[in-house]
Length: 96
Image 1 (cartoon, rainbow, N blue to C red):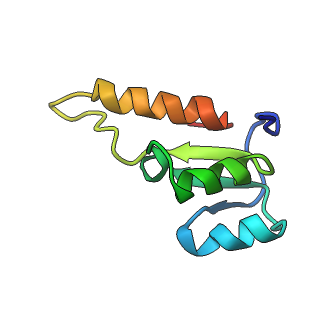
Image 2 (cartoon, rainbow, N blue to C red):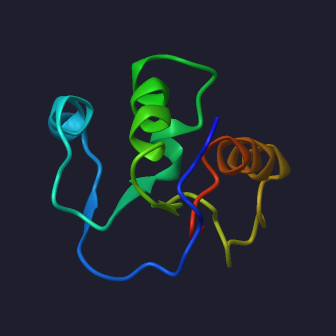
């Protein structure tokens, strides 16, 4: 799969949410990059991951993790980091 080259993110970015899926699949949108909440796409398959894969072919993506637990007394979960790495390997984000 070919991805747009990772570049520093600048310009207008938008958070990719379920109500936006069809808009981004059907037509080009006037955004410079998309931000996605990593945990929403750290799954083995399904529509959200298919949408992200399609969208990533046309737009740079930033992964925004909201459940890393950095600074918690439990520390970072190695299984979480593996799933995040799998997602990052799949979508080649410009920023994590």
